[in-house]
Length: 233
Image (tube, rainbow, N blue to C red; front, side, top):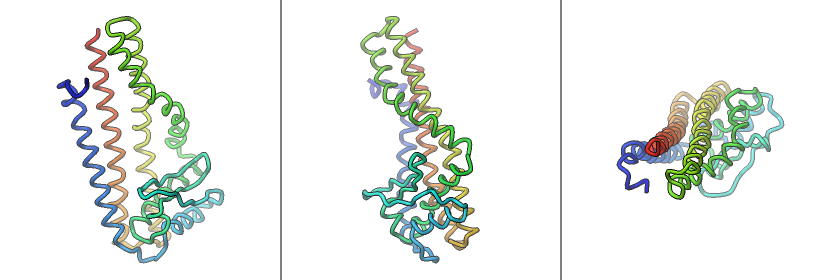
């Protein structure tokens, strides 16, 4: 249905292509930085632990998670910095930068960073609503098209999808702030030199681009849903 609609190609496809570009950029940037050994010789785990200690955070554990891909994240519920093997075990500039970024989220949490707290509060609601948004919208569009029930289902789907868009927008300052904290901590603690800091900035900027792309894709999809809804008025 979507892919036969010219409006889809005009509104959504550019954002999808941008997302592919962002993913390719972050993959190539991390691959290059992973081949550069950090002069300090510390693994991602050790870097994250030093940043946590330097910020007086003693109740956050740095954990090694399984898998071959990068699934690094900070979990505010368990208060853990979770690092993939390529980050946890290695002493590359990429590992140092990514570990510092995730530790930056833990610092945000400890300091009560407003955007992080709002995002954490929205997450369970948005996670549930986003799973229902498109099924409800499509049900209203296809199975009850033109009826009062159909319009109501489409409107409900749009409202729930807007929650997902709002979550993506709030995520942007959270990620950029965590990266800024990471770069500042690495510099102040002497964990990277000037050249390595420049590479870390490249890695974190490329990673941030994926969040920008995800936000653009969500906004484009939201606008497209509004155009479909408008055709039913």
